[in-house]
Length: 374
Image (cartoon, rainbow, N blue to C red):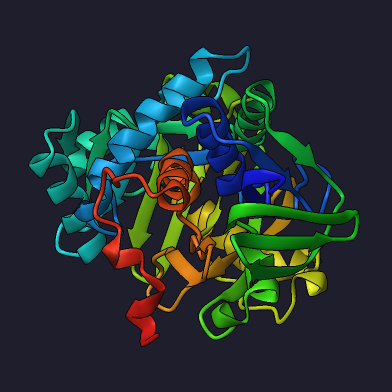
């Protein structure tokens, strides 16, 4: 066998799995990527991502998020890049809606440092958010902003330093179990290993037909706006945020460059049949709705973004990742469903333990592919 593990896809989870496998667990690793390393097609690209432990999706993620935060710090401490800005994350919404109830349970049950702000206190401390009526705010003090491209590059650097062989511009055409292991065929040749973990994001279903009915590929459209006064949106005074108001679900990130504020919709752009069909540029009229909603909730930002970028992610029907074995010797981590990057190092460690047969640190049964009926 050429390696203990071949990692197929070196983006969000693949980079982290390669790092954990090679540096922490001492495995012989070959990583294969269809594009250049650090490409901007996948779900992690776009300069910044929120990290939050007050979790809208479900409080059950919090132990994994806390581990991920420790691993983000570990990854950052070993290199020369700033990967995590501890700016906090502010969740805004009516206290009766499910996302806000989940946030409150998350921080209260797990003893996370936080503040609960009523409407008056929200308006006083964070006037950038415009009118507040019956909403409350929950400030997650363990939250912050991640730099995804830097993080992926740093994880790959650490993996390579630990002995991993990383191959780019090598699309994988087949993953096939063979006696004693798995054969991975790429456009640059054939490699064999005892195990394979597929972390190919939107391309995972092309390699594993078992996933085709489970993964819905959706564009991620990110937008940036020019504030009237950039200083009012610096990380020191303007935390990252998520706001739910009626049908509007908005997220935002403070100005990390002193010029633009990232804000926009989370997952409201439909689906695409094939990753090759991703449209990378949208006409201004296509973004009129997001500009309208951003301006309505953040009045100091204009109603038209200064720039945008388009990427993609794969979504499962229940918006939980798929983690498990799909063929002998072949494991998968896919379908991060738009909220996976913050968990990336924890998912990478889970993937490493899965293929090496080590005990898991978390209950991952809820991510099993079998939950969809086999």
